[in-house]
Image (cartoon, rainbow, N blue to C red; front, top):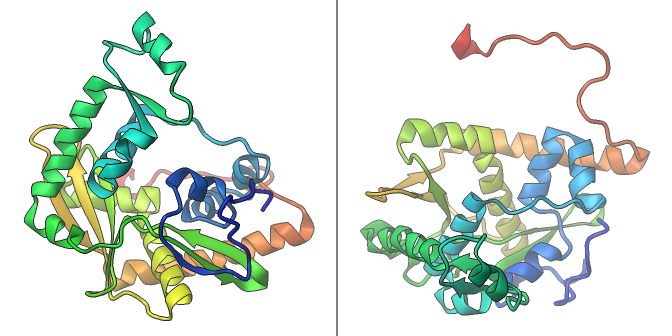
Length: 275
């Protein structure tokens, strides 16, 4: 995979469930993730560019807010370790730039961004069903397993309740309504990630969780929270896509050819909703 060595030395003969691996080390370490798998489905060339050639994408403001909320809800004790909170009006001020120079491995965050993230996180923590899921959850455990041909794979569930057979992912969004979030599932491949996690947990532990859920919270007032359960049909379709992606990866590794889209000229049509 040509990934940086994992400081926790997760080797191909050492699979299973590992608590305590820092988030940054998990992401930097070896193993095929659902994000990599979904990029491969876009095209092998995109996958190669990011995960083999090492051209990682830059974090956006939306990604930063999502990470902050995740930390506040799932790993609040890690907040000061992972982030440097800076009391400045913007990132362009002298105060911010001077403080950010001493961030080290921490991510610089404006105090106003922290306050916004806290409002979102508090909405999740105040939601009765979400709070019940979080109670006794194994948060941010790293799971490693083997797929075909000795391929090391990984996932890191946000919320995992082995006692009730539930795994859940925390999502921040602009619109948590059923119609809009269903579009997000399809467009962003959330169902593929869900099946990947369920598959990995089953391979690592011998038991497949019964239920996958999304805890979805809106990023603006009134910070509405909704919990959705993935249905079996979408997971079955995701399983087919995962198998196809693994076949594609094996073929690219065998041939050394990492194509983009189709060669030549391809006819294109309006989507069904616009026809």
